[in-house]
Image (cartoon, rainbow, N blue to C red; front, side, top):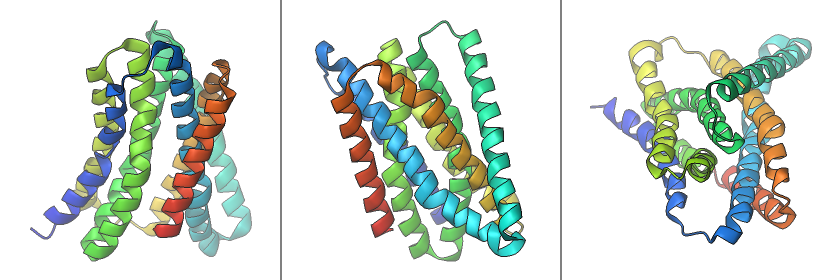
Length: 250
């Protein structure tokens, strides 16, 4: 019973991606499609880069820095971004080769895969925090929910507007969200006695590299193609505001 509560907390945090997917039910006029997609893409870019720069990298970097020093910490960051570039480029080419659907669909699938890698260690962290202190776990899960909702948007909107299929959009948002309870189960079954803060730090630095690379290499060029600069700026500013609120409150 003690372990079920942390698992439930992790599951609620992870599946909040489905809240973002509900945007597919909004009736958007055809003339506003490009504006809406641009807004969602730029909003997602701000969230992914903001989480990485303000949360994942500082916390993980200084954890690693305190043990191994500045030189090895910088090398770790460089290696993480090289791995991220190779991974995103290779994955993008494979998806493009296997699917004849447009670039927007490819973006949604890329977002889903990268966010699975993001949500797995988040699930581990949420479970372990809740296992030690329920109040700390709840606080962490609320912070995760705040950025999982726009992450759900970043998966569901591109897939829906490229396929017109709501079920497919929800399915992929659901798969990404399920990575958190799966991470929690892994933590409970295998890792709760062995997982170190250092190991989680290294994983999260690599995840930060993946999200920044995906945002710059894939999402940003696609957002620019719609030539909706006002929607691009509003989406980016909205994402930054949400990240700042999340950082200040949690």
